[in-house]
Length: 220
Ligand SMILES: [Zn+2]
Image 1: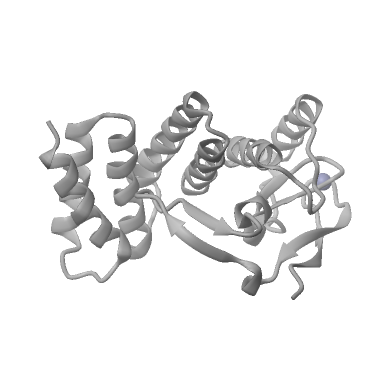
Image 2: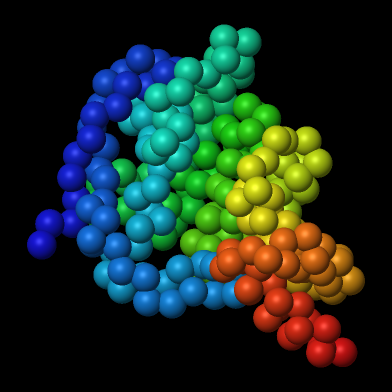
């Protein structure tokens, strides 16, 4: 069974055309999930291949966003940020990339989305950075990444236009990240909001929120 295929992209920042590795969907096998939905994979870790990175200028986003144009007024700031990060970080973009390479790439993507003011995407990048740091057993850096995710989920909830499914996800993470960062009363507040507001939803997030709410409420 083949694991990888190659896809061509054109960088919207430096115009370079390049090929990047994509994973075949049947090569992705999720064995288990943590309470914040962090997947554990059998075989290849799909998180390591969710981002696309320009090998020339280091511009990095989730695959679906990569070829979207960068607003002209942000072009210079983005390319300067990428240049700075490229000097600081070295990553292996081959199929042998490690958890540490993946963490570096999510750090770059989180910084780019934050600069572009795309809070939901910045939050997602920070969350996935935290997941890789959990696999690396680096709980101190994981907490920083979870705080970054919480900050951007909060911004997103207050300022971005979200679909119902996105609202459900964002409110779930406002509860879950506060729980993981030991802010018990905030966690209970957001889980309760989610359970009340979307009581008829079949969303996995609402079901998880009920379970988490019960567990946290029972804790002293
Ligand atoms: Zn580029």
